[in-house]
Length: 183
Ligand code: IMP
Ligand code: MG
Image (cartoon, rainbow, N blue to C red; front, side, top):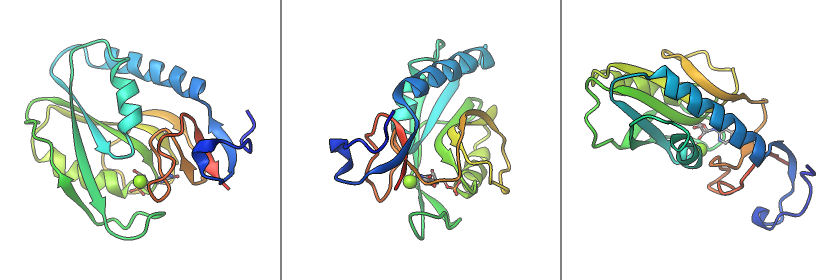
């Protein structure tokens, strides 16, 4: 694929390269869905999407999980700049669903420093779920602070700033059907 092709979605900005194409993502999401299906043979499963970045991934993923489940969301706000995580995380939307006794699968777009996830899992674990695991579409493998393992990873991401398929830069580019690195 040629990443520098003028895509009307990009508002004139060229992408450096398309890192994962739509078909490649779809294939990996199918595999993840199958893994999740076999990983949870019984019990109640709550797929908890971390907004906003996970919204497209989560929508595609749950349709590949062939067992009963429920969906809810958390919205975490971190203070500070857009490109780096500050580590101060608070919940601005808290799931209505009771987590106690359920398998919680937290779905995240990308793990960078891991600070967001660590704060979030700390907040969620006190609600006594039966299990708490993380499924991330992308993992930069630089995280040093993770207390819960990222059990399922879509792709080991390059250390570049990525956009598309839910990932944004200053709220733009979330709707790209592929994942690209910005120029
Ligand atoms: P962490 O707390 O440093 O792991 O940052 C995780 C959050 O930062 C993700 O949920 C994204 O919202 C954002 N983020 C980290 N890396 C990227 C990137 O390459 N593109 C877009 N957002 C990113
Ligand atoms: Mg973001």
